[in-house]
Amino acid sequence: MATGLLAKKVGMTQVFTPEGDCIAVTVLEAGPCTVIRRKSKEKDGYDAVVLGFGAIDEKHAHRITKGEVGVFKKAGTGLFRHLKEVRVKDAKLLGDLKAGDVLTVDKVFKSDQRIDVTGVSKGRGFAGVFKRWGMKGAARDSSTAHEHHRHPGAIGQRKTPGKVWKNKHMPGHYGVDNITVQNLFVVGVEADKNLLLVTGAVPGHADGLVFVDTAAKGQPRAKQKQVVRERSKPKV
Image (tube, rainbow, N blue to C red; front, side, top):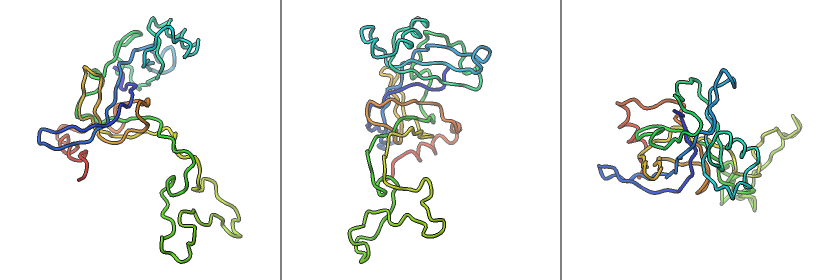
């Protein structure tokens, strides 16, 4: 079984625990994903599975490349807008998956589980050092700041070394970065609607494509589940 699924970020809502606590969650439409190809270590050098997500009609085949259309025809599946290759270290994790199999959210994830979510962050255009790097700047009532309250300040090194170091935090393009948020907690799984309810922030905008994977840092032990649940609650 694959360890992750392609998903679409739906938005945010809130759920209530049996104790009456309100928890803010991000709703992800995870899957269903169709297996397009199964790769093996003997033939391809590594074990992996290629997943397709976002089915499209034949009349919209012009929206994808001809090479992708050929891959789908060879696999004997429909056309999909998105493809994702999921590598695994052990072929046993893939089981007997083959081209054409469909993976749903309830087959891959379950409640009380940790996951990693990868997506592209929101684009914020050209931003200053306050917004881009979180710099503090000069105090509002400073007598020496004048009109430079939100400026980065001096960036030179004077005589030695007499240059501006590379990667100096400066104003510039902010956002549209590939980001992975680790150890998010799965609050619930709605198999009939392919929905995954997750605590914490998920990168990207609404309707954005993300990849949900099993947490790389392991899962909580049974005795720690309640502790993790308590930590996941938002502070009031």
